[in-house]
Length: 81
Image (cartoon, rainbow, N blue to C red; front, side):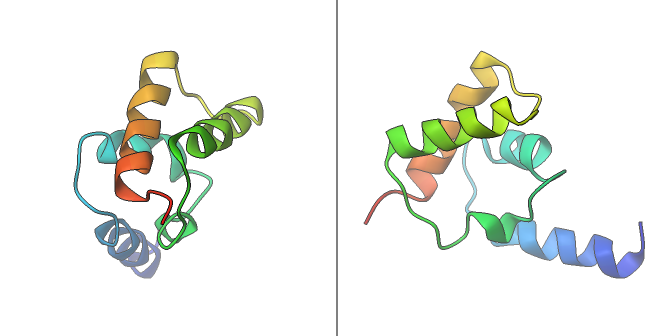
């Protein structure tokens, strides 16, 4: 991984609010998506749950407990306005 790419990834992760589930979200989702994919996006808990289910269907390696933590993090950090 080049230094520029690594710095861009770290910068993107800094845009995410701190909270329980942040590191799990980064670990599970950053292999396919940059943090910017959710920054500025807002959804209901049910909407986030559906989106995470869709990513699991597409191959994301996320267990049931991990899914709950990720959905909790997204729903708290990026709620529907």
